[in-house]
Amino acid sequence: MIRLLNFQSPFVPMIEAGQKPHTIRAFRTDGKDPEPGDTLHLYYGLRTKSVRLLAAEPCQYATEIMIQPSAGNVYHVLLGGRPLEQYEIEQLARNDGFTDASQFMRYFESQHTLPFKGLLIGWNPIPVYATKH
Image 1 (spheres, rainbow, N blue to C red):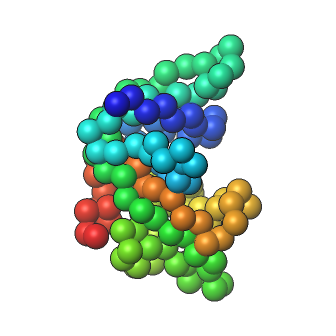
Image 2: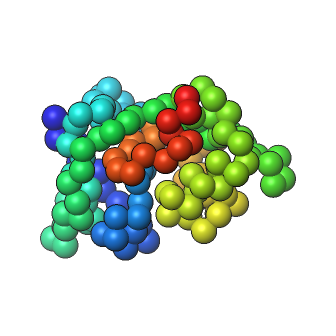
């Protein structure tokens, strides 16, 4: 099945360079979340005149993620029910297009109500933290 994913402009260069291996999305209300084997069409400007297909990639994994409120510089992220180590959260944040875990957490706190529950949807390469669960 083909799944469409729209990205904000700050993430476009990483996608085009093949440096962004995944995205984090809330669960869809219709239940039609991407699954391994689906084809992910990665877009910028979906539903606008400036729409652009950035890449078409096979979905390698769709793992439940929970981002919880942080306590100072101690961050709490569960991937597949497993708490990530602080260094893994840093890797996740950088791979997802943020400068560090602090920026990543601020983004999710500002854009979503925490705790945030959704999916880490990935294509190649599969990061180590995504295979440990």
